[in-house]
Length: 99
Image (tube, rainbow, N blue to C red; front, side, top):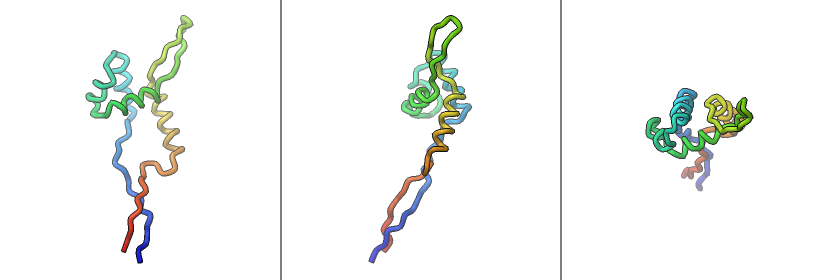
């Protein structure tokens, strides 16, 4: 007779650091493409794209104009809030049959 056991294994993903987020801000503000930023940081383009979405806010300028800007501190705060709300942060559930 076989039994199923629930086993969790840690994934080895690397989250962006605040320092990397600041590098993204600098490069993005200087007009460097997301693809090039990804190459510079050794990350996937989709990671950079999602990061920019996460940290971009609508900013009202003193002249009344509104612009969208990426802020690494905002992105870090959103990341931390999302991590707090995650139940099994970084874990994958694997079922293994044991004979």
